[in-house]
Image 1: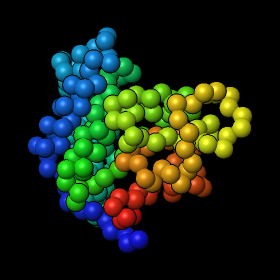
Image 2: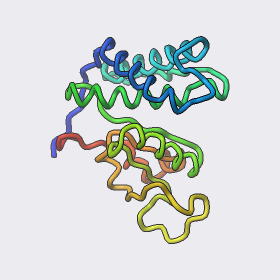
Image 3: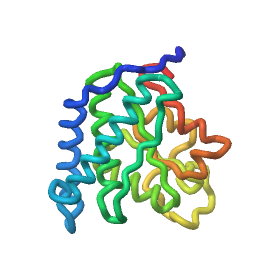
Length: 188
């Protein structure tokens, strides 16, 4: 395998169009809100802008240019829905343009949230999502938080999926590198 870092920034207009399509795809699953209007639409713009800035920083390749981009909105403000939309849009963009960044990690604080996120994302983009927690491990013998996980994987499979869901504990832990490396077209 060769190691190659992709540095071409995504086309902003194309990514935005794919993002808007993903928002439209997600919107029906949020019956209490309309993600395309008012406050929610402004939150969506902020998530897209912050995500695009982060991608641009990554593509510049300079560690000094990388910043933390934060979107502040109250609970229920749409941050998760728009994060899903951005992951879907980036994955679809990268499928069309193989030289743009590829791969997203959705990090959660609880095993149950990982299972819920996997279910939602997999419904939107089947076969492109993986999840790993202790209880989603194919070899797990005792499950207490998620007795019937939506899927089972082993850690080494994560690198073969463009979108993965993991917990903070795993991502920052000794095996977290398994969530940091993605294989695409035999490139790491």
